[in-house]
Structures are given as structure tokens and as C-alpha cells.
Length: 289
Image (cartoon, rainbow, N blue to C red; front, top):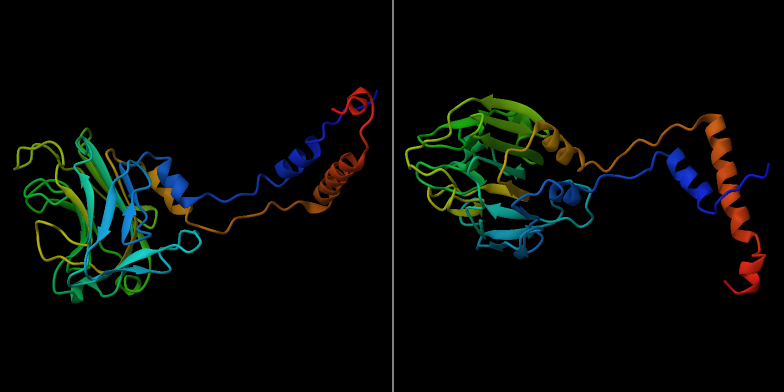
């Protein structure tokens, strides 16, 4: 019996043998989770990767290279001077009602305990209707989601806070009344606090989203760098957070082929070369097909 081999089969087999060697793309992974906005902060005047919202550096905010370590060539971030610099955006509200999430990469220039004020990462500040992610002067990172100082917080190792990039995510879910904090892809804190009603009487977030400074509780200028800021109008799951964080890793594991694997791979590649060199024959060749 004569075997029939299609020209693409050897190459496809070789790729399968290698397990489809590829690395997750960080921006694409974030976008696949349907954020309301995703600010990569690649320029002083930039546009969200989704939905067309814009971001604008204010005086004291400068473009930094390299940015967060997300395995993207020539990545940038915003560097904030801790006294005047922050980023405004054109996002107001964003449909954040029954749930929401903020994510950002942060690199502190000083310990929060040494800062003259709270260090604001990002959010939509509103009196008694909070949606704010920030570092407080006890070296905690805290997410405020309701009113009256209600928050979920986590205290990272202070020896690793300054001069190192970290990925922080915080979410709330009013359907289950749960709030979660993630640090470098891992769940680190949770609370079970009723989100609504709050003292404002509102059941959604409606104010301007800013990065590096609150527009209501001033001054809270961030001192350091911020990158890859995203917002969702639903609570990300732990698996989604882990997938986004893992997508920042450049390295991957190539399967070990062993002796027989190398033999099979060699045969497949030789099959590709043989088929490529074999002259056309038959009706198709005669007809010029």
C-alpha cells in the first residue's frame, strides 16, 4: 500500500513534536479578558489598547525606558516625581457597578513609610464611594471600594518594595460581597464586606480615572514608576490574574525530545526537504497548475 503524505504534514508534525513552542503575549492576554481600559503608557499622550480612551501626562510625569518586565521590546512606563506628576485619562465611570478590578505594575522610589503622603496608584476617587488603589504609610497596599476607610490590604516585604517592579491587582464583587488583593500573581488578602449601600447612596463608580494621584483626596502623588494599568467592570478571577502575570515571563520550557524524538524530527524535516525538491509531474504540471 502506498502512503500518501501531504506537503505540510512533516512540518506540522515537527511543530507538534515541539509542543508548539511559543510564549504568551502580555498585551494580548490582558486584552483577551475584556478590560474597560488598558493603558500601556507608551507616550505622554497615549490611547488605551481598547475602547479609545486617552491618557495624558501632567507636569512631573515623564516617559521611562524600560518599563515593566513584561517581555515586550522597548516597553515604556511613566515615571512620577512624587510632588506634581500624575496621569489624567478620559475615562469616567466605565460601567463599574456590581464588580470591578484595577491592575498595575508599580516600582516605588521610596518606602511608603518614608513618604510625606499616601502614594496613589490609580482609581476613581469619590467621597464615600471609593474605587482607589494606593500605598499607605504603614507600607500596606490597600484597595478602597466603599466608604469610611473600608479597604482590603496587604503588607508586602518592605525589603523588596523599592526599586523593583511588582504586579498588583485588586477587585470587588458586590454580588458575593467579597474583595480580593493579588501581589505578583498570587492571592494575598481577602475581605467579606458588604459593598452597597455606601454613604454616598450611589451603586456605581462615576468619576474620572487617574493614575499616580487622586483628584479628590489630595495630595497623594505617587513616587516611582507605574506601567500597564488596566480596569475591568467585573472582578477578575484568581486564574485570570495568574494568567496575566505569567504572560509577562519571556522564558519557556522546550520539551526534551530524547534520541527517538530527534530521529523522528530529523525524518520529518528531511521529508519537508524532499517534497520541496521533488519536481512537479502529471496533469497539474503539464497544465501549468
